[in-house]
Length: 528
Image 1: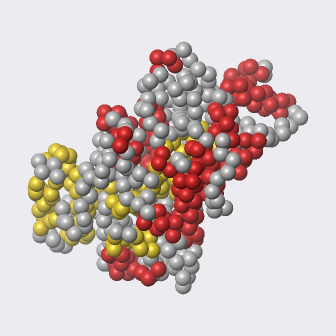
Image 2 (image 1 turned 90 degrees about the vertical axis):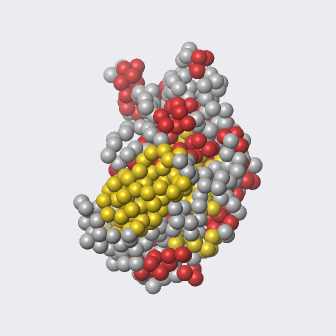
Image 3 (image 1 turned 180 degrees about the vertical axis):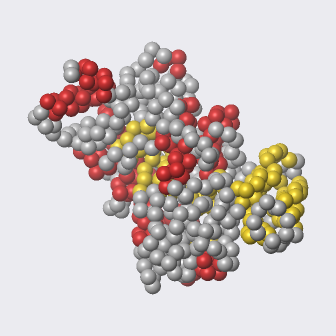
């Protein structure tokens, strides 16, 4: 096969080229196009950066964020792995919520006003498959919908039309998104192509900066590989930009010696180095803790404690480094995992696949505090009982896009595939979000109730709304929405709706209210 035919048939415009720079995987894209001039000026003017941290495996939310106000029920549900109350790290401003004792870094960030804990994040019909649940979180789709592009890819495609053909250009010379430590994620996949580049091995990043390459074998295919690299270097416009950005930051703060710390250190270096890249994505694994989540006899130690220490210490070092580099005002970060774990622990000192779980949003301009209430935990949960969701994960996505990146409402609905209500998470004067809006009510204010409770067949659900779009759903103990009772616009005030459960088995159900940032869940009991 001739070289030109070989290259044409094996290197599409957005191919990952492993080994281009000593094991580094970077996307190679085509050159500029005459259409670039027509597209200049179409993007939002912002210097903000979003860092996404994926916790692969399904993090146990109940042992990460401990419900102090429901500690008795929490302890009864998982006596063999429960964190002792006197070991839980307390948080300023709340007596109801604490975090795992390994997360001193997160405690410090929270107490400094640089962190928001969003309780019980999930979606209406949770999947308990790692692969399917990950696809749902990455794509931002409904559980029964297959979407082949990602929520962040759609955002970047909206902001940078014509990618990759007309990029890099004078308006956006840098990568749109960079993923470190993994292959390119579905989250960054746009309608046409992946909108990011991937640095697959952080340890090789420094060889990349020094221009160190893997040798090629002295064979026919080795010569072809050498030629591919030559073509790749000619077309890879981002290589020199990344090197130049990294070279501007010769010294940084100290980081823990683990995979996540190494990845975040690179992110901080590239942000300080001046890249206009808007999104960075990193990941760390090991959260599928079916067994040996804690050590027998010492529940504050073990595999999960080590994972949470890694996360907490790496993010704290990252935030400290950003501050020392003088760029912390530009960065917001978010953790996420494909699902949480069951309420009740198993006999192997572990937890099985579950539904909703908390996530962390962090940054200098975060709206600090705890968003939402402690998850509802039955006094005697069954093996299949789950944490039901208070906040749809897509509301978190939509809120960060609108409040941090200033995405307009009309564009937001296109990006997120439908309308998801805002949660106050970021303070950004450029987007008009400058204050702490009084929309998250205290747990003591009961905004959704039912009477009678317990009930036999029907019960009346009363809810309070501040006005606007209001959603009332009923969920079962698996975390699934079994009925949507209200989904429309209301005037401010108190309203009622009847729930007829004749087709449902007896047991515990949950009434969920969503009204913008106001979202509450209350248990109901059907007796027969």
